[in-house]
Amino acid sequence: MTAFETGTRRLATLAVFGGAVAFSGAAAAQGSITLSGIVDGGFGYSSNVRVAQSAGAAGAPADYVGRPSYGFQSGTWNGDRWRLIGAEDLGAGRKALFYFENGFNLGTGAAGQSARLFGRQSWMGIADERLGTLTLGRQYDAIVDMVGAIGPTSFLTGMAAHPGDIDNVDNNARINSSIKYASPRRYGLQFEAVYGFGGEAGSVAARNAWSVGLAYREGPLNLAAAYLHANSDSAQGAWNGIYDGYYSSSINEGFASAARLDVFAAAMTYRYRALTAGLNWSHARYDAGAGSLFAGSAIFDTVQATLSWQATAALRLAGGYGYTHRSSVSDADSAQYHEFNLSVFYALSKRTWLYGLVGYQQASGATLDAWGNPVAATASLGDVSNGASSANGRQVVARLGLRQLF
Image (tube, rainbow, N blue to C red; front, side, top):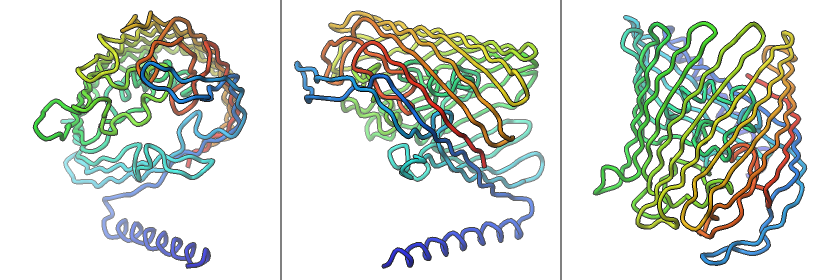
């Protein structure tokens, strides 16, 4: 088949899909399907990115050299995505819902989240104005929905994520095969609970996850707190795709063989005129199991402060500082991470923005590598989607980008 024939067939498929959507809207006036998304790209610089010179193994850490990196960067402010959102009015204050969201790389066109079709989110459910919303599918946990919504990355992008997104405040992880309940908002309060079924034969706990959260949002004050518990597979380090790429940074790659992950997180923001101040905290605990490459527990405690200033209707400036401490574990002493971020955002329209970001992280102490060897702690600014680990304890990252909503 020629390229022209392939393109024609794809266009025909899209035309049929579009016609089906239009027909369904005409046939059921009480229902709707909306196509929307985000495209985000630009230029990126990193002062130091580790490049392996030798393969690692148990008892023999990999050898890395650090090199500067320049190039195209996809999805720094927001990950590139497109989504289909469906709703049908069932009457009496009830709606049937579905939400399918695909993540992709703007520079290559490749699908994200391990090449899933709808890897960011895929769920359906029922919403009731009085009783709340019940949904089923691949979904975010309460830390993302409650704390992440007012956390550091909501002001400063994923470059200001807690190192390596160790606590999922920046939503690198989803819960598969899950059921979620979100209460209606009453007097500013909302409750959420999520349970993900593990699906491993012979075990109720293996690979399962659950999360609860509470948020208060009223006037200038926002408060949120949430908890997440996740169990790995009975096999070492097998998280069943719940955490795509979650252990790919130097911050926590040494704990991918953890049997359990527990995270507590909380955040607050307060708006006064053009200023919004924020404070957030998290406690992430990785517990070893029988097959783990480390012993005991690796505990990360993070505190971070942010400040955002809406200088004009179009211009917003923001900055933040965060500190993370990890306890000593196995043969590795404790580690510390200091992080600074500055951001500027300029709106060309309601849907198109220019932005510039710069961040600096300094790491000290020791950690474990992916094979369980004790090594020097290295910097890794931002979440696993926005950066690559340094070969040493310092890293500067800068981005210039354009974001469009559709």
